[in-house]
Image 1 (cartoon, rainbow over the protein chains, first blue to last red):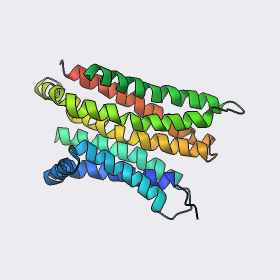
Image 2 (tube, rainbow over the protein chains, first blue to last red; image 1 turned 30 degrees about the vertical axis):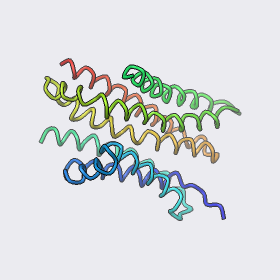
Image 3 (cartoon, each protein chain N blue to C red; image 1 turned 120 degrees about the vertical axis):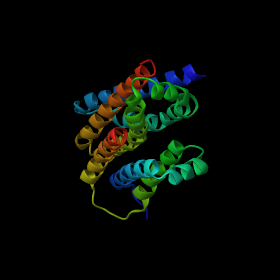
Image 4 (cartoon, rainbow over the protein chains, first blue to last red; image 1 turned 90 degrees about the vertical axis):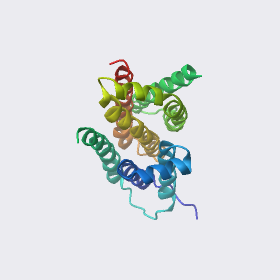
Length: 92
Length: 137
């Protein structure tokens, strides 16, 4: 049976994960070093993981509901969290 | 090498915003034959922008970063560059969702995703300009 790609779940999973990756990499130096060791640079590591999770969650999660709102709030929320995190990190 | 990659980065980034605007205009038409191919092209471009972005960030940005951090606008790196480099990773996700919605017939519902793509692309461009100015501050 042909499996449909669920864009919304892929986007929601990858957006949430990106915010988590950003915060953990900044707060836990060994994790950032691990990304650098595995991928050559922490940014490449995040890019590869986000892309893989987008594809994997889109294909693998069995869910027929659209979840468009979840994807929307995850994407916008992730960007807001990333911006606020760096503002707070700079100020504190 | 640096200039060619920089131009590619700027042109591809600008193309994302321009193509998204064209897509939104095409949606106003009763029937558009280019809406689907344009959407797929825009999603494809959004992934390809990561290549020049990565080359610039990894190979050429460290020297600029040192200048910014030592200058009067250290926040240009600490806030704007850090935000920009990570928001950029979500551009392909946003563009692919928007294109996916067009391909699955949810054309009007995709409007806000194209608008989000335009807004984030422009904000990333503005942040890039602030970062550049930060190197001279």
